[in-house]
Length: 126
Image (cartoon, rainbow, N blue to C red; front, side, top):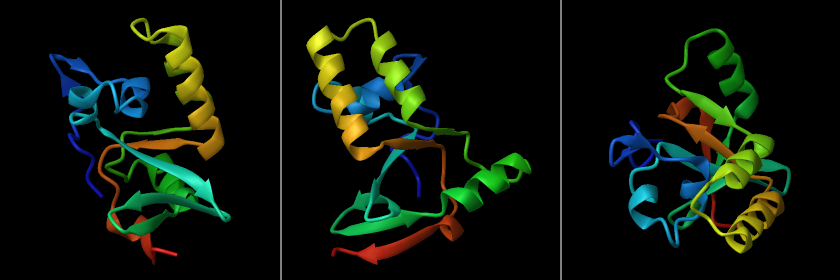
């Protein structure tokens, strides 16, 4: 699974986790995001992809990353995402609160980089 822009650069700087989440107002940043968003749903770590849900094998991906064998650059869990939101200097406090609530509701996880197919399973659109 390839993110919008694996390099993640917009205007010469890296797109932040908070900008990725705030795709409504940060459309050009999101279009250059190196992240793929996942959340917990019915005991699975999933992403909505087109009409389907795609499950992520996070345990396997983390093991491969630890062994230095993965093209994934980073796994950003909820605490890091919330910190990115809070530290975003251009977002008003109301936007930060809204994004934080959305991230908490979804138990957001963002994968940075290209995710090898072997860690993904299409679940359909149940």
